[in-house]
Amino acid sequence: MDIKQCRYFIAIAEEKQITAAARRLHMAQPPLSQQLKLMEEELGVILFERKGRMMELTQAGRSFYDYAVTLTKYMEEAVMEMQSFRHGIRGKLAIGINTISDRLIPQALQQFRTTHPQVTYKIQQNESAQLCRLLEDGKVELACVRMPVQTERYEVLHLPQERLFYISSTPLDSPTEMGPGVEMGTYFEQLTGIPLLLPSTEGLGMFELILGKFREHQVTPSIMGECSDINMLLELVRLGFASSIVPHTVLQLYPEHPFHVYRIQDQHSTVGSALVWLQNRYLSKPAQHFVQLVQGMLPM
Image (cartoon, rainbow, N blue to C red; front, side):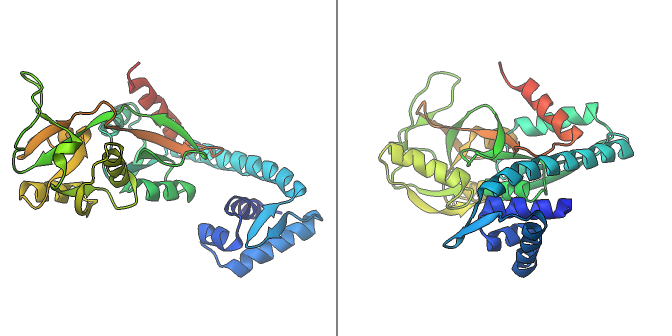
């Protein structure tokens, strides 16, 4: 039995279906079924029992799963450590960034570059759900995702919460006064009937989070669509195509915005990001050091 077979077994155990496991492993289903059969013959035990379309671990399978996870973890750690020695540290930081990234991450990357000049980078931008899939497939080691996401299998480092803002090419009829030198404000109730183009993609991340805020206030928004490209979203707002709601990060990254900005007045109307990575999977030295750097940058 080799390490590759252990990875096959782990995928089947976690996906609970041969088809789903084969898809995760990027291989055909029949060879994976054959590998499972060979493993059970070599070990002399039944590792799974079928329950309808699902595959459940037997008692022997549950015991072997713990060993398989530990074995693959140490093997990956050993390989990564040797690569670190070979490249002299070194190595590559593979990180996924959400479409609307937290501003802290670029700042952390800049600091990291000065302290780790030999590290190279693989930075991929995508929606949070897709970033989680990239983590599962080993395409990235770390991901900055917009919360909420399912975190049962992840280590999570929460980043600071930030406010939501309403942006538009035209001023509101009756904004909320907030005092001298402070942004004008608005309430969700004041946005009824205003066509909104929301960031992110329907069913994912920021889009669903903003809709949830409207539901909390028992307000039905007028949603005309979604746009996952922030540059395009801001340009459409500038042209008067629609208004939008964005987190404070967007305004910080685009300070020369030509539109009207109103802070949404609700103490619970905040959004957050997190830096996440898979549990029980070895992090390379660059990734470990980057996590430590981000932790040190967080407010006490």
